[in-house]
Length: 106
Image 1 (cartoon, rainbow, N blue to C red):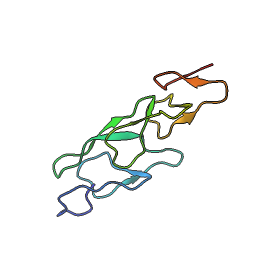
Image 2: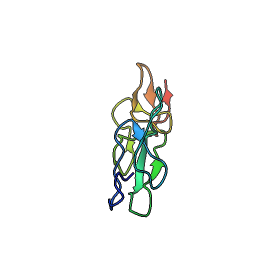
Image 3: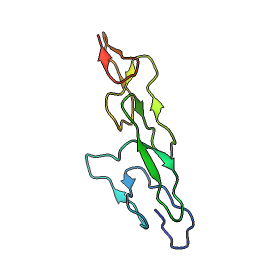
């Protein structure tokens, strides 16, 4: 978003807020009980185009902010079984993640 007509660069929305429309001067609040999807930036905002984001798929997560790629769940026992995750889950005792870190096996 851009909070000033003379601003030549877009600003990032703060945590808990989003803006999906072009040429807006403010950000919207995420609805209570919801969160903004975990994504990564493909291209940054310019005066004539909006920021383009990509979804982080199962096995990866987004740490939020202005990340340009998703982070793989790589620590022992970590996995992510859903798209758009913002954190890796830890496998319960007796279970281990599959090599792609998207499901668990016993």
